[in-house]
Image (cartoon, rainbow, N blue to C red; front, side, top):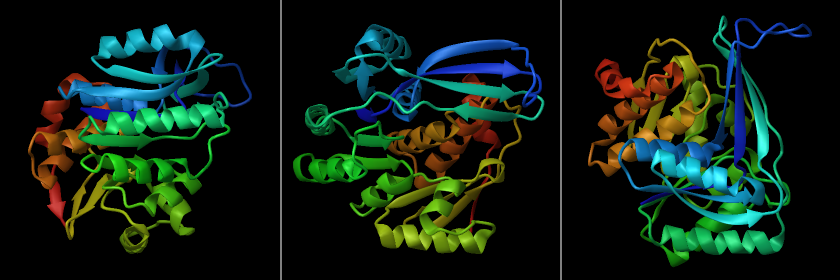
Length: 305
């Protein structure tokens, strides 16, 4: 079982325009609304690899049925601490001519100490039944920045057989990193925020990765957008170049990469081949062609640096 934690889930409404005109009127070509949040995306992707998965989340009472039915349709389970109200709504505007997406993310419903304690119990119980726990995404209002760190400490103590992946940012990432997660997946912006300097070349990235390792990280996947990605693991550095694909969306590409790597390891692949699968999963997600994932695997080149 893979458990993906999503403390701040959402309804993601994506609208597609030919070319976004700031300050003007834009005609929507099409739109779609689906449950989202990084942990929800990871649970969905894990299920697409044939792995048993579930999302653990705070969930507004008004959307409980929608989330449960959607996750079930995707082949995922669900465990939730129920809140009053509804899910936050995030707006994504996809500029098809530029291949760019503009995101407007709402803050989410506030949580209190009682709900945080209930979630901690749920997470540790779930981790005890899981091979991986993925801590993903932003924190809702009322959730302390050290909450991910607190969860890692609890899991290490009460479910030591569960491996932990962390995909977060800001202070919550910095504090959780000190607890030694097995896998992290920062992007360039998140690495820059952690190191407090711009990552402009390979030397900058190398110094940033050294800082992450000193901070407590295990394996590190650094996603770099069109420049590809690097894996730092077991004393080896692997690089994949960005595969040129049509851009349908960039939402969930990093979640697909994290899921692909873990899925590869769970399938018994080497780190190198798991990384290849991760890159293929991300490319297929960007292209909106997840059914072609295996084809992309054959197109991905991995080199050692």
